[in-house]
Length: 289
Image 1 (cartoon, rainbow, N blue to C red):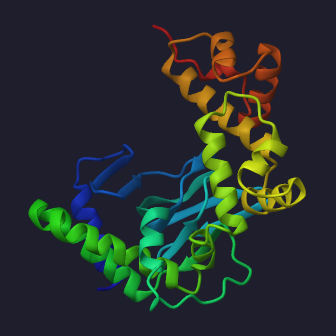
Image 2 (image 1 turned 30 degrees about the vertical axis):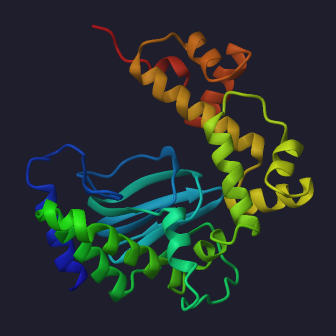
Image 3 (image 1 turned 60 degrees about the vertical axis):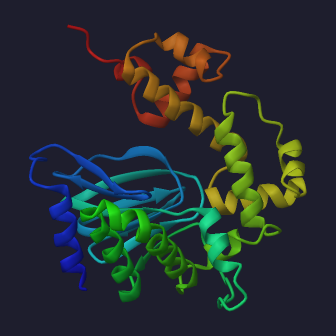
């Protein structure tokens, strides 16, 4: 099946109710379809491990100082929990989002017959052309949305095939590294999971490095290479993103949110927030009628 046919199938799943509003649906476990009707400004977020296949439009994702533009037929593969900036540059923008499961990768790649090509210069984020066999597997998975009975039986099998296609693709080097529990990328993934689970608590980086089995110097080197930030910068980004989410809910004051996400100084929180998002925290509070 061609990419155009996959795009048509995704459009049918989305339906025609979106109009000028953003649409997001999850027709199957681990599979989402997102549609933006117009270009957007940069938005900060932490991406979970994911494969994002562009079906229409264009988008730009930025990690550290590197930009990753992508268009139709190209895909962004993210192996770790990464703090990024992203914007839609050409709309309508439609993307197929496939969640990457480390547990499923290990199930697939533990088999002795699975080819494990060297992971030279593997990166935690990159834009790649989607191979035909991968597009076909995604198409067959999405088609199961029409039949819950088929999806219940065949869905897990096709999802595992998609994981296999991703990990054994020429661009799947970092995913292959992740399944090796003694690898640096695997250790950094464990550290990121720990930071995300308790970002409000103070971080003692040497202890965190020891917990994932690395020296402090090696930990800093690989953490920076994978996330384009230091552990403390990464933690701060998590705090600020959660703060923005809470502020937009409008249930707490700026000061309360600052303390809620782990800051000890509301003034420092406001400075960091303004630097990260380009506006003071109070501007993200909902307008009261």
